[in-house]
Image (cartoon, rainbow, N blue to C red; front, side, top):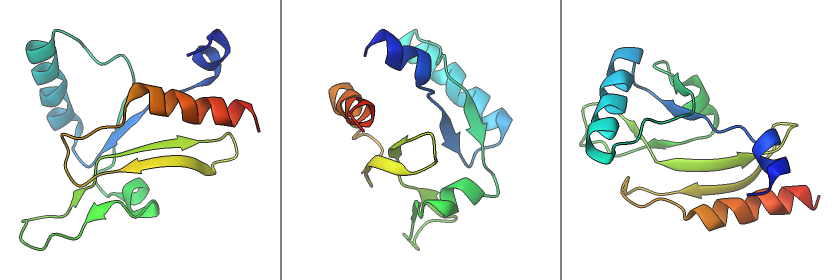
Length: 108
C-alpha cells in the first residue's frame, strides 16, 4: 500500500452484533492472535447497512439471518468499485487483491 493510500483509505468493519458482543470478539481475537484490531467496528443491529448491500445469508435453517462475510472497496462518491462476498466466513480476500482494487481506484 502506498503512503497516499494509507492517508486516503479508511478501513471499517460492520456487524449486526451490539457493542458488547463486538468487544467479546475483539477480546477473543486479541487472545488468539495477539493483535487488537486498529480500525473501527461499527454496530449495525438493525442491519440497515447490511441490507443496503444485500449481504444477508438466506439460510432459513438459522435462528436469525447472518450476513455474508464481505469486503467492499467504495470510492469517495459511495460507489462500490470492488467486492468480495463469501458464504464461508473462513475464506477472506488476499491483501494483495484489496490493494490491487485500491490501485485501480487511483487510476480512475
